[in-house]
Structures are given as structure tokens and as C-alpha cells.
Length: 225
DNA sequence: TATTCTCGCGATCGTTAGCC
DNA sequence: GGCTAACGATCGCGAGAATA
View 1 (spheres, rainbow, N blue to C red):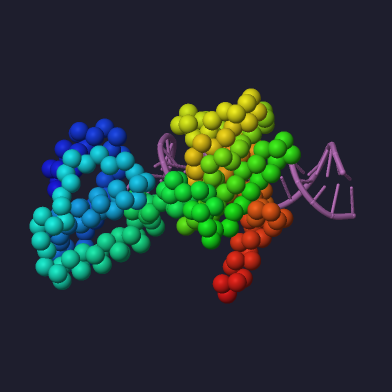
View 2 (spheres, rainbow, N blue to C red):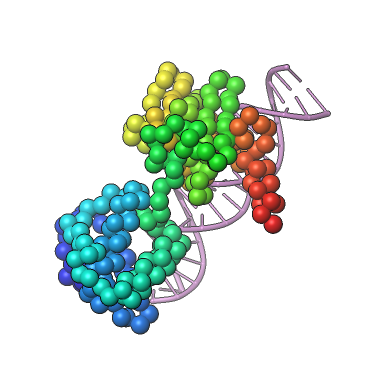
């Protein structure tokens, strides 16, 4: 394992962090490790959040584990799915429907989700949904540009979205989302849409209503009590 | 090696101005 | 007067540097 990590560090100059997974009683055999590796690669590929650069793609069926061991490893995996996001690693978390099912119409793939919107006086309009804690601005949404406001701390993010082709220019003052994009917070999404820092919790409103995202969240919390 | 300090960034709050 | 937009202020957090 030490040798393999060393080789990977030499061959892959993008490497910044290596994470070691083990058990408290150190009872992972080579077979267990291969099974876990195969399943982790499989699940990371299914989730589609990261680009895999792995020359080794072991097959879970290649080395047959006893049924009891498979069950143990699946339990181990389910624990990993809980622990990894806690330390900021979300490569196993499936992407939200709003991002993955783009072949379906927006209304169909966001069915059941509450839609939020921003309507700016300039006519710029953006729509978003919240899924699994992520705030996803839907394709076709518009964003202001070249407003010239200072203190836009999300300027870098917006530039990246433009260079990645997520935001495409409509005219000199308007951009359009070519595809849905997940933001870490409603404020980040609002800042990109409005081209200025803003409190996304009050800027985003439930579609066709005056209820803010903040109020909606409060109402949701109250209904769960 | 541990602790403290500094800086930058993101998230949110609070104030002000303008409009209806 | 109420609402909204604009934007400055503040807080929290993490990373890296400096220091004991």
C-alpha cells in the first residue's frame, strides 16, 4: 500500500491529499480492500461528482468474498457514506436530480421540489431548487453582468462559470445559465445572479409568492416539529 | 510541536436611498 | 409608510505564517 501511494504521488502531480481508511481492529484483508476499492470506484463513478483517474478497476466479483464478509463490507461502506461528507468529501453522494436528469423537462425532474426565483427590475429572472442541502440554479435562468458594483466577493466564481460555459452572454448586461449549477448557499447563487453581494435567504422567494427562502425554511422547520 | 496571529473569503445582517 | 435594491459592516471559519 505504501509503495502504491508513493507511485501515485510520483505519477499524479494533481495529488494533494491521500486518505487512508482502516478499521479499529485492523482486520481488513487484501480481499476486503479490493472489494472496497471496487465498490468505492463504482459508487464514485455513479455519483459523477469527481473525475476518476484510476488505472486499476477491480471487479467486485473477481475475488469472491463469503456472503458474511460482503455484508460486513457493505455495512463498512454505508458507514463511509456517513463519515466522508462530515470531513468534506462528497464524492460518493449522488448528484441531485435537477443536475443529473437534464434530459427531462425542468418541471418533471424538479417535481415535488419547491422552486425559488429572483426577479430583478431589469427583467432578469432566475429559478432555483434546493436538493440535499445544495442550492441549484436551473438552466435558462438569467444573471446580471457588468453592473460595476464593488465588493463582489463572488467575482472569481462568476468568472469561472463564464469560462466553463455554464454562464453564456445574452447581451452586454445579461448572462444565461446554459445548464443547472449547484451553489453551496443561496447567497452565493444570489450574488452570481444579481452581480453583487446579497443575502440569498431574503433575495430568493418561493415561486409566484412573496415568501422568502428564509421564511420558507422557518415554516418547513415548524412543520417538522 | 503547540499556540497564536493574520489574512482572505464567504455568509449574513443592517442601514440608507429611491420609488410607488 | 412600506417595500425593494444597493452596498457597507460584521462575523465566522480555515489556511498559512510567525512565535514561544
